[in-house]
Image: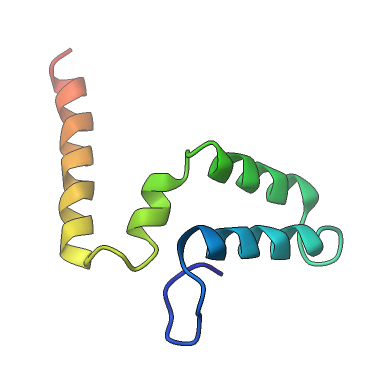
Length: 82
């Protein structure tokens, strides 16, 4: 609903607010209310910023892969230092 596509004119916050309105309008018919509200909460508190940035066609795949590898390396290093 928010990824960059040639046929979508809204981007960023406008796209997000439109998507949230769509999700909320479909509660009970297309979408589970708990799922929608959980997603909206995560989005509004900024807990999805990382994923929205990397999975919203803003970052080339190699850059994403490098960031992901750094995360894995950091996790591995934490466990190896114990």
